[in-house]
Image (cartoon, rainbow, N blue to C red; front, side, top):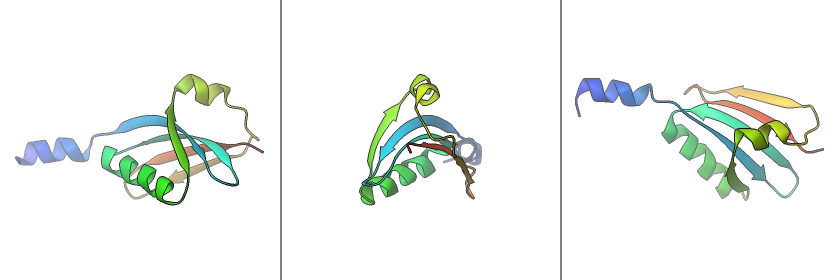
Length: 86
């Protein structure tokens, strides 16, 4: 792989909305970051017993939540905003 292709891959950003359900909580996530990091994040949630479904921006905007928002910035610049059901 050429250096130019490698650099383009490192700067690639994907954005998605996910609804995540666990045994004690339901939340909607607004996430962005490198596709490999996002895939790793989704697999980690599933391995921890969560049900994960990709959803839309419209569903995120109309999701009923308890007004608590959590923002996480990790070393690969993934951004997570979570809206939790009370």
